[in-house]
Length: 381
Image (cartoon, rainbow, N blue to C red; front, side):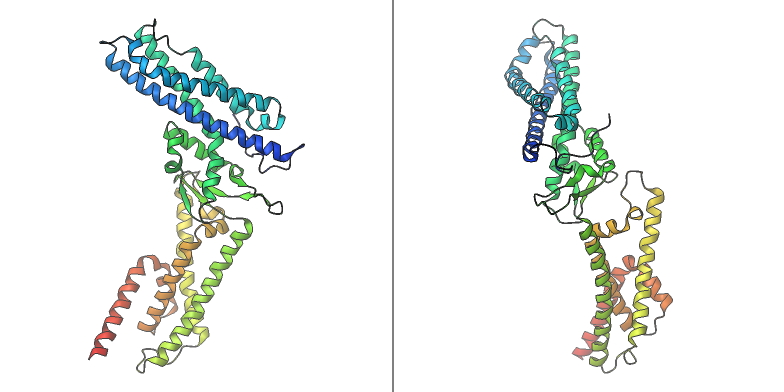
């Protein structure tokens, strides 16, 4: 069944009183969440009950085995009955809420009706019939848990995303494993979120701020990334460009200071700014080529649901902003080490160094430590 990909918080203002409708929507989500908790408790109860019946049916009457569970069942059943009744009452008088959530609530109501119909006769039923009824009821409860979580988890996920920084990833399974009855259910919900980005649209209480996508799911990795608004994405791109420029300027300043402070400098004077800029840009191009090839390889081998940089480069840069900044820092340090220790380095070698910067990071550090160790020994002498 096709599910609605928006919620009232991101649609245009509904007719009537928007605040009242929003409050009703939040109220329904609360009822769904509470219904899920009660149904999940019953699902666990029936799982334990089945184990006990199988273990003790030959030595004890089934009615005696069931007795300790009856009070828990009676309490959960009453709460679920009341929640379903409240939800159907709300959507019955609100057409838009019925459009957004009516199908899901009706499915929950139907599954609960079947659960009650197939509830075993523990006093007079035969053991085989009782076990069949327990398993059927467990299946209906699992379906109810899924349907409730299908509607409530995206909203709860948005609340989680609001607590983390842009680019930070949440492990979906770890975050919501206790709100489903199986990993398969969690996977279905995550895939829906990945295929319907508007499920994570967020509208702040400030009327002048438009709704925007708060997160993006990579269902292949089981992760959901926090993302900012379009302006924040462009700012991330601008920051990366500024970091590259700052690394170039910083390299030139450091090389000037180094050549002036070391009388027997390995540099034969300061290279012209243009030459330093060319070498740095070439090294940066090598790093970019490495990223581009990795993106191409990933796109050829990735699963259809995987989040790919090649599909939205600006979004990928936004998510990887912190990682890219650290990469530029490594490039900056590597460039300085190569310029100081290999003053005759050419553009081709610099490109290869940039391409291999990830694997050469440790080599740059080792080379730096070696140079500093030599300088330290000379100073002591």
